[in-house]
Image (cartoon, rainbow, N blue to C red; front, side, top):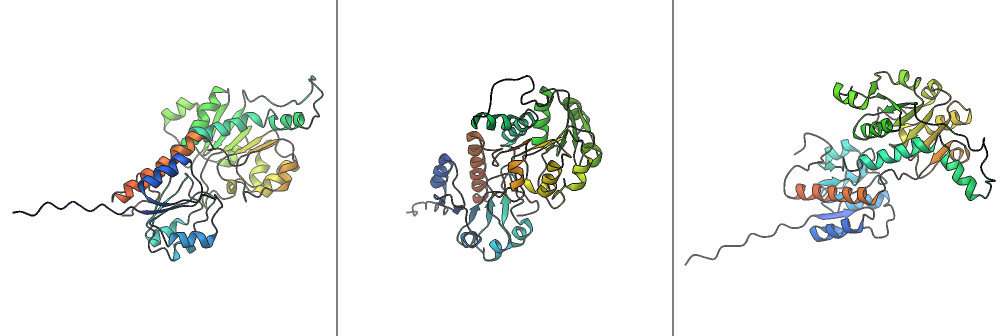
Length: 335
């Protein structure tokens, strides 16, 4: 008699460590699928804790608040996948990850509309002095309407300069056109003619030339070695005095000290910032300057966006655990 067929053994579930609290549905699904260790306190992990976690898991799920440097990979023999909860990966030493044989994934495409909405809110809010008006009301200092009270500037008919014309930059351009702004952009590569035509966008291969000609500048490029302090003292000197700058990308792209000096000297009219160079620390000068709107890195903070990010992370882990290349692998050429 032939022996009964053997049932294939279940593949062991990967050990996954998550560095911060994620949406509850995401955490619950992870618990169903993986051997997961959650950070229920939501306290940011120290460098030592991150290094320890990397040595105990197959998959680490970090966020933008985690500095994943070479030290994290130094004793991470077990770690094989870094499934980043977020799009930007400038907090991850990608070279060290490659050297350690760790695959890195991110969550592109799911935060485009949320971030573009925040950019548009800042484009509207700064020239119209919404934050100043709100503070005036809360302080009990508003004495009623007057013909010259809280005057700002309309945005219709103004020129918008977009630095970085990827998914988010194009989404901002679409919104800006609906508000009557003329779109200009600077990008490493010029967009196809049909895309430029649809957005009615003018390309500038020279950033300085664009900065000198637009009324509002919005930064929508990633933070890299090439874009670090892309906008600094020299660039602010080129801008028109009535210009506003909006940043909902990464704080390090703007030299924050140069920004404060430009605002203080009146070389530009105002700024709308969702990110900061040394966040959560903020240059105290920004807190007291008029014409500045400050929000706490909340461009992607929607329930829908966070849920979609979590689903991307889970999908990347599952595809990797099944022995396939994750859909959102950041670096090319890895097995």
